[in-house]
Image 1 (cartoon, one colour):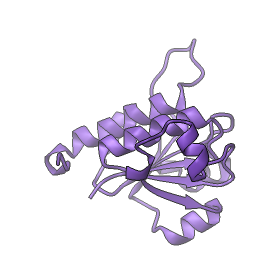
Image 2: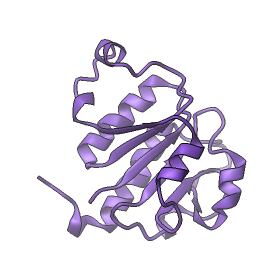
Image 3: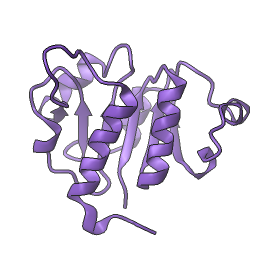
Image 4: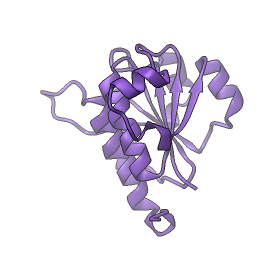
Length: 156
């Protein structure tokens, strides 16, 4: 079992590339929900030097509706946002959970955050900061989830 990292409408290819590499190394699946702000076809991925992309467990969804229809989302999901006071480290992660991040420019759509308000989590920051880079945020939360479930982490 592993975690599912979900990016809703990612816009910056370098962030998605870094998150893809993170997922390969963490044994996590990566879910990309369209629209995506860049090309992820094989030629574009090769050109970006993402030689590990073929090792990635990648799922691409046409819309948030398709993603939510195909996945049983509830207690197994965590929605990363700056619009809550609940720190990610007060969440209990379990193998197979979905950790959902919004686009670099807009975050997770408000209606989704409101539907799953009790599942919203944030990374604490000082008043000077507005938000963290998407790839950094993903790494912080994903590796805390691995820390919490390390006894079942696939190290092979």
